[in-house]
Image (cartoon, rainbow, N blue to C red):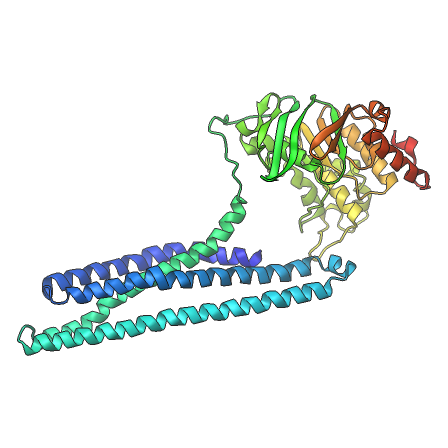
Length: 479
């Protein structure tokens, strides 16, 4: 990734120099040469000029594309090589845990060999194009010299004209050659910068609606799915006609097997993707008809994965208010940390909330990182809170305390909770059981437990069986 950004930064900064400092002089040189042949040498050398132009066309339409393809493939392999290396380094602990050293070493050697092979091939292609250009250039120069000598012998040219032509030929041919090379330079820069632009765009087809208001806020927080169909790949549907309503200020829980579409529902609410069919409404407004920034500034998301920044603990929690210029005060940061049951741990550190994470700083456990993540979500002023198995990395007792704090701190907010441990969603207004992209069951906790052979009932019974075998689990404490 760092290699992509370096190449792209260099490419984007080079465009101005390429077009302003090089394109203009080259075009002027070509136009001046055309004038010279037409008016000074009359029509004797027009065929030679046409031959030069024809070679330039052949070079740009046949040889240069081959060089471009070679460069593009070499660039791709270089980026792949860097990605393989950085992935192994960043995930070194995971590599060790699963004994993946040999796999990554082998994969890196394969990518490195392929990169060297493509780089050698690119050098060969470039050399062929350059040598071919030199041969043609010398050939045309010889032909032009012979023509000059014949015209001199017939008295159609003066000796001074012959000398002038031989010198002028270099001035004529050089701009044409340079323009062909300029096309290659433009392509190389475009190839490098396009990778960055694709990363920024994320190949996302979502666009802002033309009729989106200049400003929009979530007033109450009612969420409604109407016959929503969605697929990441058109041939593989993920959601198949999902319809439900979450009343403002209430909590809805979503449970089900992995891959059923639970997280996708969250992503559609925040409009990280657009539905294929149907609509997602907030306060009766289709999320596609408001600006994405306006939509997301009033939604707080606490994901399962912990994406913390190599900054201070305070910065990471305060980052929840990034949409409002990091407006969270120290008291608000500490309050969120207390709700997430991480304040005491932070206070025990020498630098407290100014302690740096990761690079040259403190490394927290998975559960502690998750609590920092929860604090960041809770400090964000929002009408809607989305929790995707936000307490999955916590032990039972800590989870119970954090869950109680979340329940207290989210009163009046619309909450959607994806949960694996069912005791954490006992008080949800409604529970949706997702199976293979559809709502298989829905109801309150008590209602779903009563469905004979129901999916939810079987999940509950299985978890209770495991819970009875654990001495640290207090089902009554969760209720």
